[in-house]
Length: 426
Picture 1 (cartoon, helix red, strand yellow):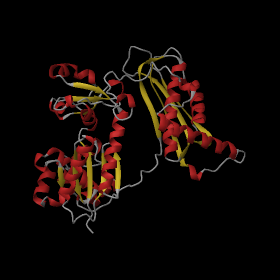
Picture 2 (cartoon, one colour):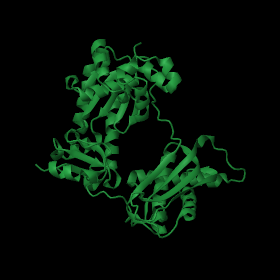
Picture 3 (cartoon, helix red, strand yellow):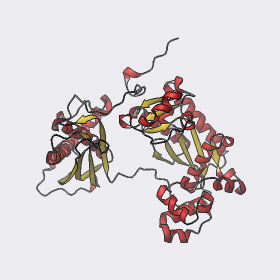
Picture 4 (cartoon, one colour):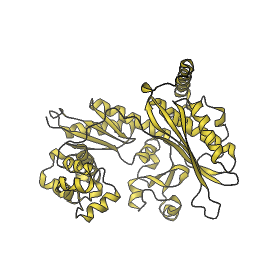
């Protein structure tokens, strides 16, 4: 049976989410900024046409923004996550096999759907998502995940495909023409470093890579590159992951909106970040064995004293209990904290993560304490899901957060907060 893989990608996702609830932004140059309104992380097509680069610091764009009236919005992660969940739920109706690849992309296995006109089927996906969420998407189809990613790229950049490209329907001559016009760095998994190395071997375009010798590339670059070449030629080497594998490391960190000097504020931020990390740990049914805490000043403020440090502490018994993880994290913070510095960022990480089902308890550990901990964390998570995040939290997290990140132009939480729901008047 011929395999057919589709990749559905929301166009300019963060900007499109903002436009779905604010029609005044349509056809206007718009960007969405990263934490603390630092860098550009999403751009409308109009902003791209003005030369705004992805990842560009916003302070460098002030002149062009003023000249062309570019509107900059702070990141609204609650809105983006909810809109992503809605899109993925819609797409799940189109295939029983789905891999959510990122917040704005997912793969669908359409093998066995050949009796349908797949271009029409892709159009129905686009129309339903646009009608139900207001978000525009592109659909790419091929016999492998790598081909599907390229097809999606082609659909996005070539008007003639009307946002849907099925490589099965593209004749070889035209396909080679399209691949010849695409730089090799546009292939899924080929980053900047690999692009430079491939170009040093005379492989400059997608077509060059497709026609390269996979055995030779395996010797030079490894088995992943060999699989990429096979995938470009239509041999499926990378299957869909219908179940997201558990994370092997969980990170939680933020840059502060304002400099922090006192220990209490740092402790509050570490408690918050560890609480978030612990929630993710429990959601995947895992336990952590190692905790790392780090703090640092701003490397960009060279006129100020510089300091950065981190500390890793192994746990006597693996845990997912927020109270225990925070307790150890604050012990680490006390060791590395130094007064009189202007701290710009703090963070935590959980590693050496294992499945909860495979835990081997300490001989002297109390099973009763373990069951109580599990019950308490379960109730805590359920309340926070139902009543809103941080409805129940540790006291050391505090209530006043002058250090929280800057979001000077954040839109309302249209879909996740009762007070922000839009109202319409006749």
